Image 1 (cartoon, rainbow, N blue to C red):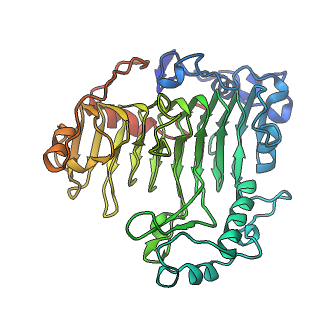
Image 2: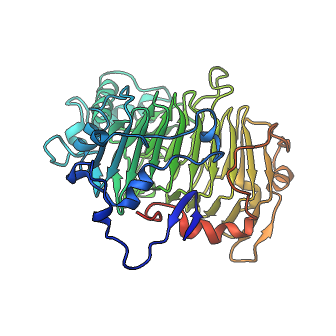
Image 3: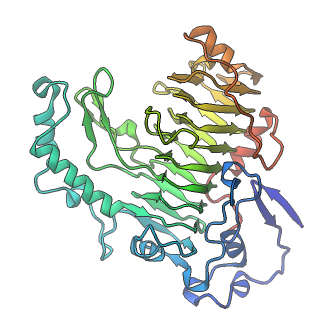
Length: 448
């Protein structure tokens, strides 16, 4: 018997079927054998018409990887080796299964590293805070030896915690797999699939003080959990993104601003395009999805085409997503939002073209539906079929754009200038979205 759930063909095995070990591929080394279901999942390609990543040649990842490039990894060192020795240019097909917990702060010998271990000898946070206190330094960017030492410290951390992914790669988590304290960098690496992983706490040990960011300055961190740059045809599916027990809300305040140690969950920038993010769970984070990194009109124009469908945004604050330039299809997602620090859901940026359809918003009583949109310099958004359940009340259809325009100036126009055509299945009525997305979105929901 077969049924399709979340873009995955689930095979219902009857009792008495052959055990998984008997179904493992005999041509794969015994240490790297996985169950028949895991092998089928690892070699699955993005279905036709499933969002922007299905455009052009489609997204097949490492589905055709040979046995010698099919690996089960248990440590940072094994992951780097399986990816081709940290060589992002390695275009050989690679199918990588993550088993257990892989920590980006794991040293070459397996010893855990700390931020202190990665710091340049010339860097100390207390000295940095004393030197660049705005009361002493002023509202100008930091310069001098301490800032230079911080930059060298960032370079140390990047070499340690940023894992470079090459083209034609699939990375799949076995049940319970976690990537903690690291960034998957997909840069100039098209045709990549990342599935069934829990990403935890991609922390920045050395945030930068940006004195001119906003009226009061801000701390800015560098490391996303997944960063997609200068790449095409990327599918990110059934993953969970969290800060774990190190949330931004627990960070100290320096210079009157929160010490920001986390950046995005999944950022698509630097001319990247043709990305589908489906059935993911984003929980308890601040900044999630930045699509387009600059307001500068240039090579991003005509790029940054992204589809977001059947994702759960749970207790998160902003960038759900924030968009510049790109044609971004946002449909059948569930948003559970609220709290004193909530900012907005859909950020309408410069020349952005968001098409938001049949999304469901569960919001606190204090959240105004008018504030689910935010104008970051855009002019239009297509928004239709949204439903809202506010403060435990009854769910009801709400025209979010009309609510926004009634309380904000200038108005946003109602036509983003395009209509999505790359959708595999019919769009669900919004009231059905929480019933399906809640149980099925995130890691460890796939039959593996």
